[in-house]
Image (cartoon, rainbow, N blue to C red; front, side, top):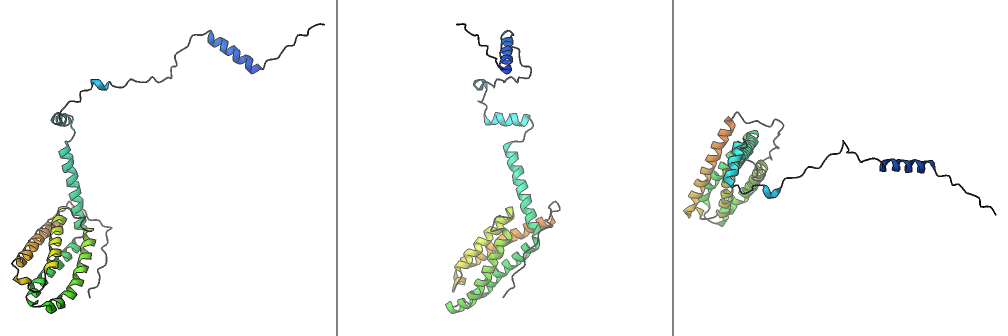
Amino acid sequence: MLMRTVKLALPLSLVLTAAAATAMLGCEPRENPYEVKAKSGPDLHKIDNTASEEELAEARKAAGHPSQDEIAKENAAMFEKGAREYIKTRMSEYRDFMKEFRGHLDDIEKQAPKWKDDAAFEKFDKKYREKVKDFGDTYDTLTAKGVEGGNTQADLGAAFRDFEQLNSDIGPGVTDNEAFPEALKSIRERLDEVDAALDDIEQDETLEINADYKPKKKKKKK
């Protein structure tokens, strides 16, 4: 019985792949001209990191970079300028607030001798507390609850806290307390400093006013 030879037809793609592989084996590998070679990083063990703060500061200065203190001063100056512009934009409101502040102090000083007993004090205190509450709301709105105003706000805030303390201490017989006139004097001196700061801000032509700012409408006084 004769054996029949069976010929298998290989796919053309397989033949071509095999031929290409044979050709590649016969060639030496070539360098890829587009390959990006990795760069070796610095040896951290060879870096001198023993320089003192003074030496680093001198190096920054020599390179023309500002020192940390200079950067801090520049930032503080920028912050204070913004705070002064905030006040100048609201200058009329600050002036009204200061006038009302002094008015409350004058009112206390004038009425205090009349508080001979609880009844006399209560007659004054009932209406006064309503005024002071509205005054406190004005303070919070004007100063963003003591946040805005920079150095000027530091003095104004101190005066307002002393004023709150005074309000908690007043009552019948307060004029007999030696600390009473001193408390009034101390608050007024603080307000003098604030007024001086407001004058300086108002005259400072380098400050810009926010033209888009619109003050809130004042509450009608009862």
